[in-house]
Image 1 (tube, rainbow, N blue to C red):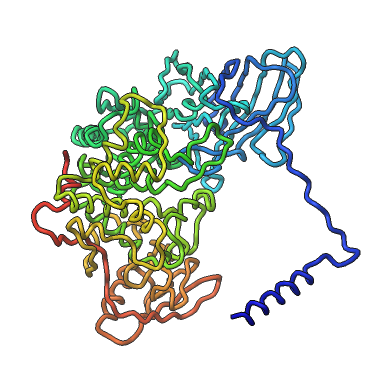
Image 2 (cartoon, helix red, strand yellow):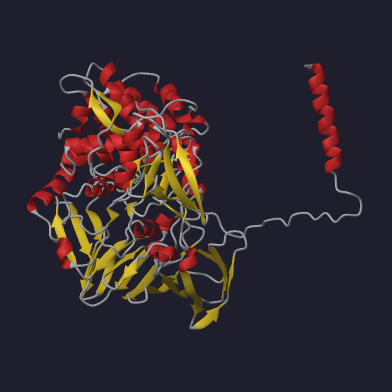
Length: 639
């Protein structure tokens, strides 16, 4: 041991000597980064921000804003375009879509300079005697999907205030008073959680602060229908065509039940009014983004009209999830994720609560409301947790580290998600909360459940739509108040463990076991494109209708045969590819010794591949193993 240490020391010393700058070589020093941007303070801004947005150029997708700030003073001033956005968990402000930025005082142009480090910041020098600053800018919507999310079409638009405004540095955003008006196309209707009054296409929004304004986007369109769900909650629906807005009374009753069941779970309501801003469109970009008094919910066409289509079961999970966020994520928020303005970076360490428990309640409330039948929910849960049962990424990366993914990758496509992981705090977090529920029931003799935790943790201060932050210790303390246990150790283990199977034990403790059979899982399978073929739990691939591979599971039989996500299946044996033919080949291989032979095209080359697999078809199901009403039975039943 001593010899090794001495050897390492000598090696280190020698390496250090070799690493020195050779004589005569240039060796610069870094330029110091000196920030002149004032830190945010919790003091009132002395003036008012006024926004006047023209949203009528729906043909070209151009928002035009005239903004004024009063109460300013002469000298250096910094203004921000919002960067770190709540709900996105990352620095995702679309600065690349900003155009035609001008600052003026008394009609005269004021030059601006972008901060060389914080590129979302603009520095200006306000002239002596100035009382008002005028700002003009444009936000250019994507017009094709490859440019980003399309937010303006000839029949609908989504206006997010953070994309069409700047705000002054040096203040908490809640201390910045704002008055906003928007001109929409003639004949359109607009909806938002922020109250407004309108004179035709001109909408004037209630005076508020910049934090609340950014949390209150609008959805507007030519074709609109409102469905009241409760005295405080409205389902505002917009669609590409009037036909997509036709809903049956039974469908609306299930949405009313969603509101009723959520209030029964959480107790207090943290809004004076709440709006589901639902876009039903094949043109505007899809979205699922939470806000305190509303949610932005984007689904493809067929939300009402194709209600019985199995793919719509997944689509109907969106509203329960985003509605839950009004309590979890907006009212209660991880202390390290709350920031005083949209420039201060967020830290996402508690997303396994913020998103994980929201994912959990999204499933439960979808079932309790009737937006999914019990069997549909069991099938959806089976296909969802199976995706973690088959993925080997937990061998090297723990779940809590995935809370960094919104910042690391910002949902850019990954080639090997089953090995790299993605935002696993959603579903894996939900699996941990299922286990928490099972443990609460078991330890309390059936008298306590996660419902008790939800009411204690989220059911505070009815009508308060401020924020109450929490830490890991607050979560543990609330759990201990429901049922004493060493919750800190348990949660820490689940968050940080590697090299162990996915945490599906909570389902079995609650009366249902994950099993695999040769019968397809009912409904739409998670991660399978409509019309595609699912061999994820057998060969380890999902195949698009074109024959292209949508997924290849790391370490699966297909992976070991050399397949990757850039490949396409051309033929099975000597027959052209079809999903049914590949299914027949998998069935036939179960009773034989010959591998499944495929012709693969990838990287402009064609090759023959043999997959040595003989396990037959495998699809996930949740099989009841308990008797009577188990914990999961009770969770899925309406209150």
